[in-house]
Image 1 (cartoon, rainbow, N blue to C red):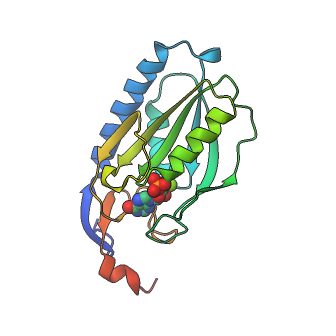
Image 2 (image 1 turned 90 degrees about the vertical axis):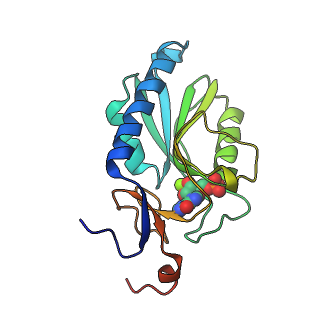
Image 3 (image 1 turned 120 degrees about the horizontal axis):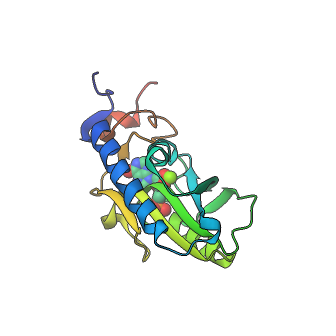
Length: 189
Ligand code: IMP
Ligand code: MG
């Protein structure tokens, strides 16, 4: 299949994502098997909408008991820059008190979104909050935050595909790619 015309370069292929997701899921399942987790169940919280492809892959290989929940936290507003303060647009409808939480994210850039969500869950009484992200963009960091596990480290470039969007589109590409920024600006859908 030919890459999408807005792709400058495919950075991570579908096979690489599959393989890494399996490795992460097994490693993290083993980690929880050694912890004292309430009800022997982890509450996995996906941050919509970007988490969907990665979380689906990750879940296929995750072997520890889990419940799946979702939150919508906006930070990018469809553009290519992060706004100052993240906002919770869809909250959980369960109590996280005493729970072991695993946040599943597509990418960490400034870290603002996750640092906010992490503090929020801790404030609500979660016993433990861990983070797994498919991609980590450490050069973009504006707050002190590190994922507990990440799939791939990437450079400070605007990426699309496998959950990552440009103005809500292109999340369906089955790979992670560098976007062709010159074409993006006045692309006719
Ligand atoms: P942060 O709060 O700056 O860490 O932003 C995290 C969110 O920004 C991610 O969950 C993505 O939705 C979005 N994001 C960050 N980098 C990219 C990118 O390269 N392409 C598309 N979305 C991105
Ligand atoms: Mg996101």
